[in-house]
Length: 181
Image (cartoon, rainbow, N blue to C red; front, side, top):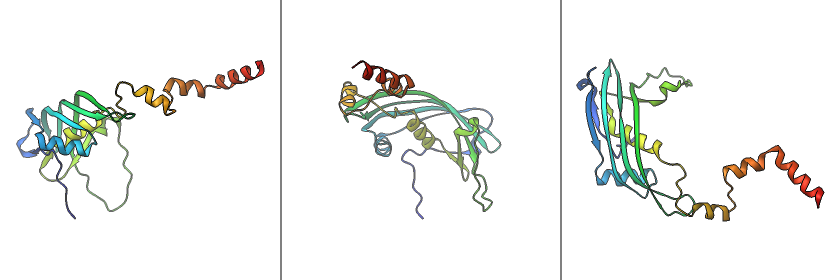
């Protein structure tokens, strides 16, 4: 089994952290940005950096900070480049990987637990957490100017049009129109 190394790895040893916040700046270099762009199906990542404060409480590490990035996505309708600037705060909890008890058990996470990243060993990967935060911050349907017309020509309706068509009154209006004619 081969372990893959993340494109943007910044390991921080847990034994170097305490309850006193440790500030850290992580910035992706050109090769890391190119690899992340490929992974996230982006045309390019011009910049990616994060300011992070790390605090350890026993075996849990809290990372709070701000992610800043400039990316180029592809328009969902035309494929044309769509520039985006991302400036997002984040809060991530690193927690030790739960020990397997041998069974396939379903785990329910509360809303507060949804930003938990499990780790093994004596380090947390702040770079990979920042990369994943970037992926979650991307516009899932980027649109270039003119995309609406292309989508309309392809038969894609807007949300408002879809809601109007799904309305029970839309059927009545159609029936009323057919009775007039």
